[in-house]
Length: 176
Image 1 (cartoon, helix red, strand yellow):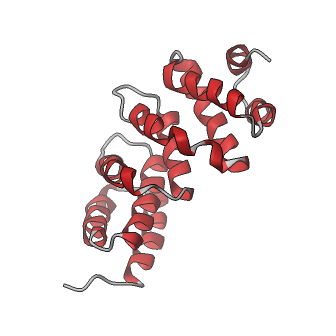
Image 2 (cartoon, rainbow, N blue to C red):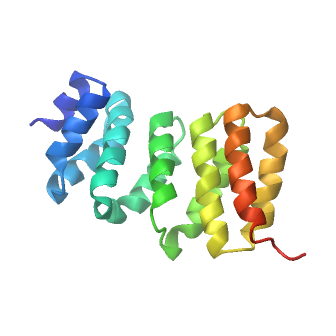
């Protein structure tokens, strides 16, 4: 399979799953996919992000060595929203190494507080921050404050997700 050609051939769930199955647990094929995500042209990067997410679901260990590069890509100006969305979607599920916690916290707060971030990116960022706050309780107050500032301008999707996150944060309140 010529990976880049297959990525460009069709943008559908069927094609995404098909390519992810072809990659499977093969580290060399996954490396090719990640190189396209990190260095491909805009459309290839966009479509690769969804495939990376699908690969992560089947073989989560493949992504670990690529986390720093993926985080760097997510911070690039003008990066496609699909890269942000699928990157933060993965971060919701993965055990984030201590060495990357600061970067992930900063990135997720930037997304959460951004006027332009898509709803899914904000919702996934809330979840990532909630999980980190469970490890690092000092973040709970900042996360609550950010959510409270966001709610007056947010739609129903963010409100529903925020209720769930706030409920979990309140289950283990921060002492003042």
